[in-house]
Length: 415
Image (cartoon, rainbow, N blue to C red):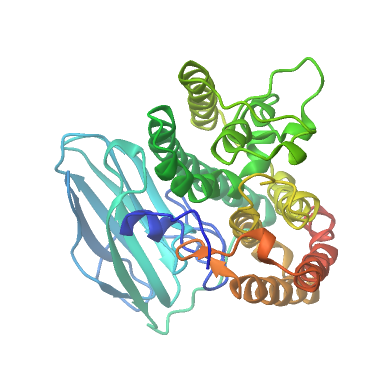
């Protein structure tokens, strides 16, 4: 199986793990609809099965220690103490390693903060993020057993929509926080002329961006600067970003370059385009961390639809990664991002149209299964050029089968 020889830490793989179960979102100090409801203000371990169970977390410079690896379903209260010397975050992740079930940000050194969530039975992970950047440390399995407690959702659609928006913003921040240092590592290798390392980091680094691409598109010219393909650049506009560097790392033959021999970028030009990509990625990170940054409920569902459109218009045609042929990595990341966005509003839509939700679930699972036949983000995918015409057609049919019901999501959500 050919791939850009991706090398990742266990922590990075945990955050960028491909879909293994239904995805969704949750968080802040409120857990997402599928997992949340009203919780007591004063956590206690006394009382019936619905009482809040208290757990402690120690976040240090090199560990994330939780007082227990298992808890009964219901209301869980994590008390997080930062014993390190950097501001930290604590996350409770779902079984796929992508969904944020609960998170607390901005825990200063020596400070203690609480996170209360309503957790259904299942498998989860805990992780801390000293410095509030990167993939986090101390990822550990956490199991929620069935207590028999009634965890029925409560609240009206307005409350649910507000929670979904909070949760999606948390997911976006997490993905971009992973993107920033990964992009730096990629660009450091590229600037230094270590093309083998740069090529090995290219596709997997881009996954965090591809999962939340509609967010970047919402910030005016940031997406064109970061991710425009050569064919999309208007005459007179400077071509910058990932794909400008991609072409230099996988230089085309003359017949694939309008009949002209490709001229490699000089060291100074490499530094120039690297600096621009790093600055634009930093600007995106700053934008989503503005205090007033939020998303509307329809933007979440439309983001899911938009990511499938990205697959249909670029990845499935092989036009997105025309030089590196790493389109299937982008395909996987777009699919993951679309499912996370869908799961973020799933519990609002399901009571209104359970058949639509069931159909979307089925098509997501089918398409993911078909894509998995060609690899994964962890192990790598086959080069897009190795797919036969029939295989591309089958994947396209899977994308179309999912796109059709998914296109109805927003209308049902806001209707």
